[in-house]
Length: 434
Image 1 (cartoon, rainbow, N blue to C red):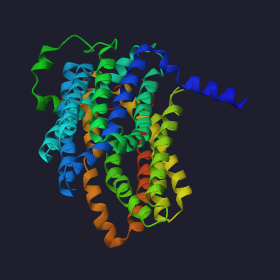
Image 2: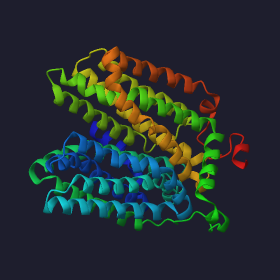
Image 3: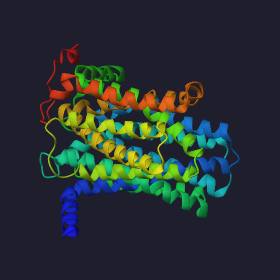
Image 4: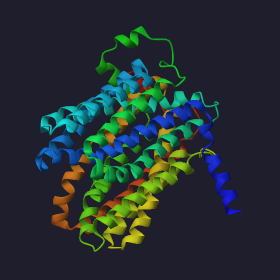
């Protein structure tokens, strides 16, 4: 009986994969993200094996993040102009080429740090163009998925599921492969996965442009196109309020947790094994949340459900601050992982339903940049601040902050009242026209 119910539940949740384009999209995304997850583990070891130290590794990590910040907004403009699929295919090809070049350099010798910096920076450029393009591509894929009201939500859930499964499987696969085959082979595998992703995207039966080309739009300067996206972003209260919440979340909650969590685990008998369990269950929770978001019905008030789900991120910080043992800490991470996938799917679907497709990539680039802009500052400041006020104080503050800000977001009428329907102009859009 239980087995029958489980099979029925799984079939209902994965029904979206019956549609050809959604299958191709999920396969390409899952393979590409798996490669990225393995490469993120292999690259630091490649730098160290090539004679680099902490400073050189820092240069390489900065080279990956810097171009993403610089080119993210431009990537949104380009995706809106040229079409998101074209941009995503080009991004996959660029990252395939950079990883293939890096793998070749590692397999034939010990490349210098600037080889890593240049190639990893090019990888970051590709990522900057891919992220906003994917958000704009998903509604077009969902439009070919039977035109069901919840197909868009299912497509976003598939994207979240691909991300979360790669987060769980990638590091485990990379750890074994790096130890037995070396980082060069793992990075070569990443190059192959990008090629697979490019082929899957190229096979999609979607239009690269949502409408006939607009000569006036093509001639618009990049800064003017960005201004239009910014005007659309600030015209929706629910959009900038939730973005502001995530900006401060990454600064005050998640960055300190990622830095101080290993510090706390290192002082316990379980050490790295305990921290690995915590992060594994966080990824497993995201997988469960992604599956739970597929099938069924879209909540009538999606931002209310999404905001409640963000409260789950307070639990791991609170558990660490309270000194709880490994099992309840891992359970808190599991709940947070479920919430992370649920809110990601609902936020993405809401944006795609309530924003015009011709500006969706630009607005997504703004929300992504806003959400993560202060993350590096949080990573850098967590240790020094904890040395002054204590680790428990920093983590405890983060937990309280997350609960409090979630309550404040729910108090905003534009967040509470926004429905899951397709109306795009709930608020005054005067700012868009100025």
